[in-house]
Image (cartoon, rainbow, N blue to C red):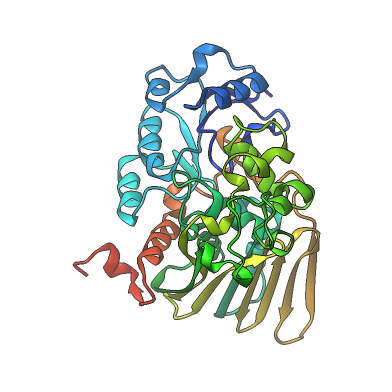
Length: 412
């Protein structure tokens, strides 16, 4: 079986690394790249042996050529993804793109109207894990009865949060409800399988200013400059990058993806570039912990809590039905799904080890089968678009309930 030819569009997204260095068991072959940074582009081409005629600095230059790949993975900033996806599908490419798409719910709706069905897939990688597919199967096959409540919590580690949303330069920084929360909303939509009518968002605020530092320390500009609180600071670049390479693998690989043209070694991160800057000198006031409350069509209240400052990334979901309940904890080697029958009180327990090669690897294996015509995608744009609407609407909901239908169609 020949590998599927793929072009990667954009190398400076936090998740680009998930695609850059893997061969996916020879299922795909990178045959082209679009990247404006010359050093990043050349390093990628050296790894994947891409000839000069398939190296492009802009997506317009790429699409001026006749199609030479089956799939385009779009990893550019959010505001450009819609335009690129629209033009690339018209050129005959199948698209896999990171969410979010565009800046508003209207942007997403416009894209849907302009492209043919089953041409754009969204990288909602959680749907492709064996863990959440098993949870989805429990809900479909077990005696669950009418669902009465849904509670979903994701905990974001210190290192991931400060790397992606504080130290990341402005041109790459996205609202974390849209970049992170959209995956949680999509997972809820898929598991509950019903529309939402109303959404409300509550949140607290975080300040990253010198005056907000602990103990009135007024830290120096960089963590290595004899900072008096560095050893106990939750946002220490030295701790995140230099000393904890094994436990902060995600933060380090995302650094390498974003700044592949900068320091050669991870040890240099805290000494060069923005990643070694003191978080409290970023002068940011930003939304922190968030809770989304959805009123579903059936009347069920579904809550998603996004909590910052955990030590490890974990997700937990608790769904209560009239005839049973499901508890799912997605947390590395301790991932577990428990279905409890309400009548017998007997537990059905499944233990999981999360995919060693990462979420993207599970997703890519499935998507290559889609491209070969062997199965259908779990995340076609038209099948996941509601979650994108809801995320954009929630982003604009300032602690007041918003009627989703009226937001999308003010005449209703």
